[in-house]
Structure formats: structure tokens, C-alpha cells
Image (cartoon, rainbow, N blue to C red; front, side):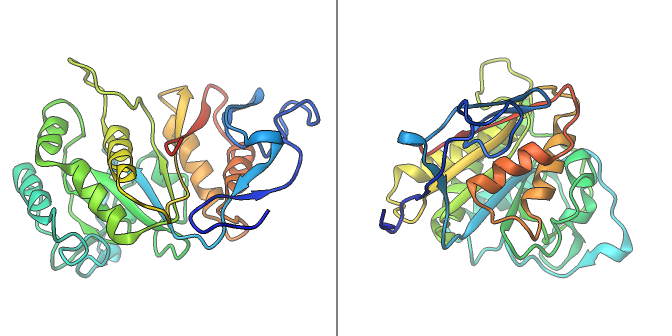
Length: 285
């Protein structure tokens, strides 16, 4: 099958989620992944496996409560999330940061991927100086920052009033502009928690901002964007970030092709806590 620009490339092969493969084998196109095997949730017609070529990958992850700002991790001005990259929504980002009272990072600070030290960050060693993907952190204090951009310590979570204020300021539109500016072929987010936002809901909204930004971007013409997915926890909330971090570490590894097959293999091979089940959903469907 010839490749059409802006479309998934289809690699022929048997659908590993069918009876041809034993329970627990790797390579499913999408589905519930845990220690009890895998069940496919997304397959192409006739069992073709969807993958990627000529990739430009944007990767999104949440910030975390636990931070450690060490002198060895000091860096200069931001290089990823900048006014030059986000001219249309920069004022909203600055307004949100001022409302949160975070220290200005325009001249430097502490490398975000090193300062954040929660479970997702402690289980992956490949976020700093990553050359395989452009990594963006959705931050309750800074809105969005690059993994190598500077931050300072803050004590906010993307919940309740904080999340609502970021929503009113249009953080989701900041993500839209980032996607529109960078024109990725593929987007992957790693998030715990639910994707919806109901009245009175006090859960964290990192995943909501990511998925809302992606969906809004998809409403525009993005012929180059082939696939956008969210890796999330279906079960095991307390240890889910540990599992997500281990999967992310394998996915960004040197042996990974960063394809959908590579994502499935990472989900399968990662040492995920037994009470955690991870899944992923395709936002482009």
C-alpha cells in the first residue's frame, strides 16, 4: 500500500490481539495492558498494524507535587516554551503565572525534568536533553514548560480553583497554538486520571487540558498530524504514575522506534505495579 502524506503507514502482519497470539504477548495496537494479558481496543481493518514514519513527536506529561531544586540542575533561559513560539497566547500564559505567583523563569532557573521528582519522573531517566521527542510539561504553576526549560519551586496542583483559572485564561488554547506552530506528525500524552470535567469534581485536570487542546487543534486543518493518543491508567490510581513513568522510559529508549508497536511493546515490557492497568486511547478517531 503506497504511503500518502499525512496518513498512518500500515505495516502488514497478524493482529497480535487475536487468537494467533497467546494471552500476555506484546504488540497489540491499543488496549488494556496489565499483568493479566492484553485486549485490543483499536485495530485497523483486516488486522493491519498502524505505525508511523517521518515522525515529529510532541510528548505531553503532567507536573508533580514533589520538587527538588538543586544547584547542579540550574539552566539558562527557556528554549521550548517561549514568546517567539507562542506569540498569540503568551499573554495568557504570563497572566496565569502571575496569578499563581511563581518566580519568573525568563532568565533561568532549575531544569524542569530534574526539579520534578514525583513517581513519573523518578521512573524515567530520559526526559532531560531528550532528542527523540519535544517534551512539554503541563504545569499548575507555569501553565506549560519544556522538560529542559527552567522552573522554580511552587506549591500548586491543577485542581478546583487553580484548574478553573487556567481554563478561563485559555491554557487549552496555548496547547492548540503549540501544536499549530510545531506541526507534529504524532502526539502522545502520559496522564493519570479522568479526561472529563464534571461540576464539583476535585480531581486533577492535567489530562483534560492536554486532550482538550489536542481536540481543538484537530478541528483545524492538520494534514500532517497522523495520530494523537493518551496513555492513561484504567485501574490503580495510587501507583499509576509509577507505571506510566516506566512505560515512558522504555518508549523513549534508544531501541524504540517511537511507533504504535513500540508503544505497545513498552506497555507490555515495563514493570508495571500489579494493581495497575494501563490503556491508551486514540484522539484522532
